[in-house]
Amino acid sequence: MRFTWIPCLVVAFAFAGCARAPLKTEELSPRILIEEACGKAAPGARVESLKGSVWLKAQSKEAAGQFPATLEVKRSGTVLMEVTNLVGGVEAVIRVEGNKYFIDLPKEKAEGQRRQQGSLSWGGIPLTWAASLFLGRVPCPSEAALLEMISELTAAGELRLETQASLEREAELFVFRFRRYEGRPWPEALHWERKGVAPLSVDFKFDDPEHETRSPRKWEAKSSQGEVKVRWRDREIVEKR
Image 1 (cartoon, rainbow, N blue to C red):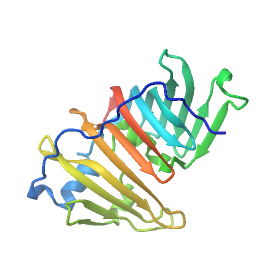
Image 2: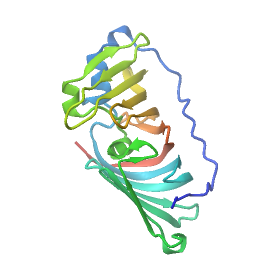
Image 3: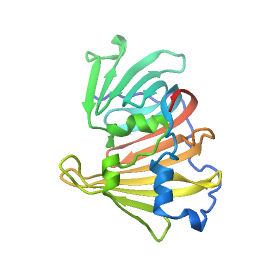
């Protein structure tokens, strides 16, 4: 059964953003760019949990449409999302816990099946990154993979990270594109690929950085299996490091 939300309002998801400032030569080193994308200086690095509301647009077998939602997100990997209509009625409650998601529908909208669930990905986007994305972080290699990766700068000034396969994980490719924000590199796009027996790729775009946390207030993720676009309406940080 496919859970489909009927679009209730045309929402502009403009990812053009402000003018792209060129990076300085001294900023273009793998060490600096890794720190700005994945280290202590990365967007959202200090955010442990938050709550707020978003406009979300989705197109996948799991859900389709555009709708407002309220969220509670925790670094542990938990996302609780309540999808509402324009008059505040609850259309669905979505919960992500690690690699699994659950969709609970009100009785009057369930058509005989009140709960749907799945695992591993949503529209081809790995669920392991769901909490991080909503916390305002950019997907990155695991700490263990970072220790064994190959890093380089491309001719276009992008950061390319290639991780090695192991018994616990498959090889991955991360290619980050940066722009300058408040005098520092800021990751505005990411191309990710997973290699191995079930290859997959996702393209991410990030925009509208928040001054305090450097987190994107707009982001989108697109794979061959679907896409998600998110624009924060309001965000309240509940806990910081």
